[in-house]
Image 1 (tube, helix red, strand yellow):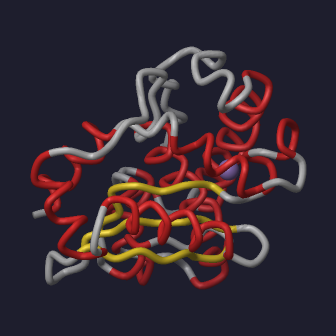
Image 2 (cartoon, rainbow, N blue to C red):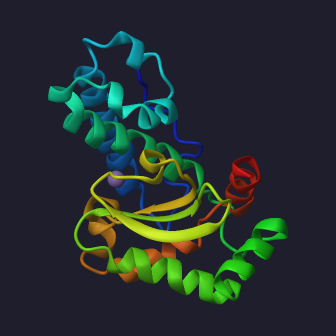
Length: 202
Ligand code: MN3
């Protein structure tokens, strides 16, 4: 069975950037809903229920055809949010450092250009989806966005940073102002955790 991870901080800890009500609803209702529907969709395939979310994303070809859409949507919803909660922290913000910073500058020109490209890509994702910073199989850093709960794990890439641009992630506080929400998201990014994931991906 897949389970909802605990938030690594209290739901009000990301204030004022992400408000308590949004974080609580997002984690306790939306994310829990994906976990419940994922478990339901795999009830007849206990071997898949025993996998990690990463293993499941890499083995979608094993899912029964009639459940595949539900597993992609809800398995994607689950794993995407697991990363999202981990790459934020109340002590976040600032800038990436060390090898990650060096690699970002090599890939995107400067840390400012990296930020600009990441936030513009997330801002421009039409309708519901996610913005991503990933390490591809050639160990190169890439930025893109995906629709719904599609994600880099599904194509063999390793995401190290993501941002939820479904309206439920920001609408209560920011309404239609996705760009303003993204600037605030930037203030709570846990760069040491992103750097740790970068090293692990190499
Ligand atoms: Mn969400």
